[in-house]
Image 1 (cartoon, rainbow, N blue to C red):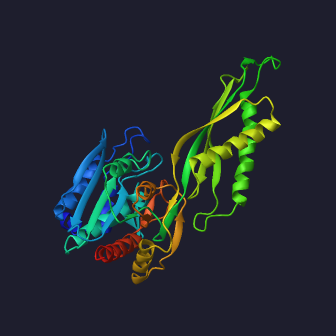
Image 2 (cartoon, rainbow, N blue to C red):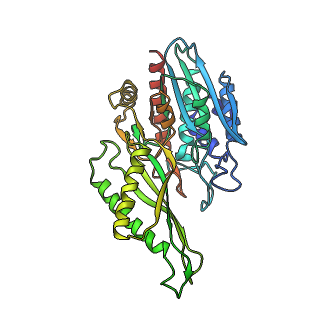
Amino acid sequence: MIETLHSGDPVTMTSRLVRTPSVNPVLEEGGAGEREVAVLAAEWLLGWGYRPVVTEVAPGRFNVVARRGTGHGPSLLLNGHLDTVGVDGMADPFSGAVRDGRLFGRGAADMKSGVACILAVAAELAREEIPGELVVALTADEEHASLGMEALVASGLRADAAVVCEPTGLAVMPAHKGFLWMNVRVDGRAAHGSRPDAGVDAITHMGHVLVAFEEESRRLARKAAHPLLGPASLHAGTIEGGSAPSVYPDRCRLVVERRTLPGETARDVMAEAARVLERAQERCPGLDATVEAGLYRAATEVPVGSGLVEGLRSACRRAGLRGAVGGMTAWVDACFLNEHGIPAVCFGPGSIARAHAADEWVAVDEIEACARVLADFSRRFLMG
């Protein structure tokens, strides 16, 4: 088993990575975090002649970074995240078993198979002279706040291009959506349930806000769509309010998620939300509502005609794949790289539809194909 792992077989490594729990502890109580899986990846990289650096970016949360090459040519960053979402509802979350051409377990698709493909490339290129520099960066906490990627870009890391091996079904995805969480507050006036003359129902008033946001959602769906990502969208995420059935609620809180397209800013979305509240107030003159910006992550994109995208597509076609181009509807850590001047696209095995599922799996042939494409592309890119 050790010899197989150190030869860089991506399927075997995927299974071993899945069998090493790395549930994000912020998302599930008792989650193991990235320590054990980071040490495992670092040991493999060390065995292939790299000098991996394991960094604790927050208590119990770890990045792994390794480099190889002369540094006298182009530099390429291969990135994947080490954490997974929780395992509630899964019968055998860390099996890593292969059945009927599928590898099962938490993280199989999102994204331990992608990490395994990165490591397979590292193993293969370790046996060759590389004029450029290969940078392997495995990061923590992508599933929550991206502490690992934030620390990586803050360290001053540079590269000429990057591939983030999120599950794309082996399509090249140069664009991804972003999001803004908006905190909406409606205030009313508490009163006994028998005193409609004294109370102001904050929950009922929030209903007008919800209707106005629903209308805005329909408006967004009618707007011109991004060629890879489709239209922007919004939805109500969480809502809470009131204190007891017999009391007019004096408060109601709503969190709305707005999925953004490249070029849209948080300022744009907040101006849009202000107009939504104005429309709600026209219908409900007594409405006392405010909206504040919460967590924001930008949508970014790399031109479809760029050398990075075309290089990956050509490598796909050499491997007998279509070289399809698509859009990543989910937000991904490629955002941080693009914003820091490192062009980044997504390409990896598995389907985003299987990510986080109770029966998460990835096709074995996709893992193998991804590793071949990524090695071919990386070698040619680093040759300049």
